Figure 1 (cartoon, rainbow, N blue to C red):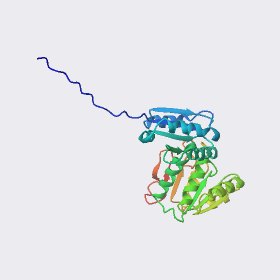
Figure 2 (cartoon, one colour):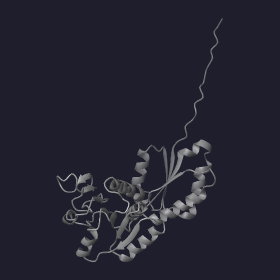
Figure 3 (cartoon, one colour):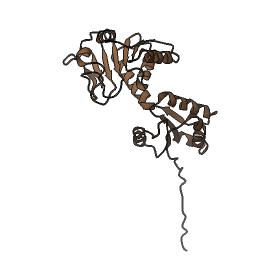
Figure 4 (spheres, rainbow, N blue to C red):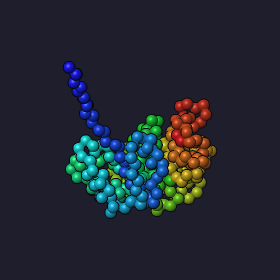
Length: 266
């Protein structure tokens, strides 16, 4: 008697592909952000440039309504670009497009402002209590500098935010102050080297967040500061923003052989 053949097919749940919508306010979406997304394991990257707030709702709903239930966790939005203010407007528009439990993950990191600033503040906190410390943010009106100042203020630090323009520094402090109720924000635009040195002499922490390739404070000046505990340079393009601080420094003693002295991060 011929034997009967039975076929058994196991039902395997089909995994949803990981999709990331890259919403960039610049004409060309950031290649840096795209590479990071691919290396993070994104299956499909959908890139949109020159994104305006008015166009966000349809993009968000397209990401939300094509999937349901548990599959929504595999769709996410990333907002980037060089204009942080515009990117924040996009972020608010995205949040308005959500309703109830129907939503996807969303991250804002225009010009790396959040990730870079968070790393800087976390590094500083390893060496000094941020509560009531004095931190000088050089080049503080840019996207990263603003975030650094905001995060430090949230930790109740006294923040001296500098710029070549006092008006710009005051405007940045005012905008940050509207979002943060703790800490203290002070605008500064030193007009000469003596004023600049006097400002830095107040610092427990110095964070340089100015334009790439521009030295904001010399090695000699940084090494002369007796109160300084942490020097952080966020500039990855030579020359360093803080003289003597190198790109890959990580808690490196600022003064050679002085293990209990101030440290540097590049």
